[in-house]
Amino acid sequence: MHYFCDETEDYRTPAEPEAGDSVVIRFRTLANNVDNVYLISRKVKSNGKVRTEGLFDFYETQISVGSTSYLYYFEIENGRDICYYNN
Image (cartoon, rainbow, N blue to C red):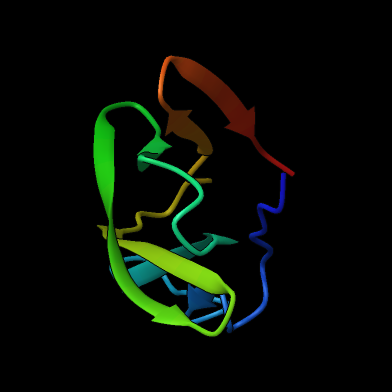
């Protein structure tokens, strides 16, 4: 499995958001390797595939952050298999 996300600007823009900012969170998989990727937090938000670059697909979701930590993880679906990814 080749999944990836971190806290750099490649995967979170802006990398260090201020309260009230709109933030884009990206997740990378191998191209055509999964059915769906979801960002899971207090409420489920879908990550839509936005592009394929070479061997990888990129999914992203836009969120608004407040003054407290925004905790999340990813749920990856591939057929009937479900896997979870976090830091």
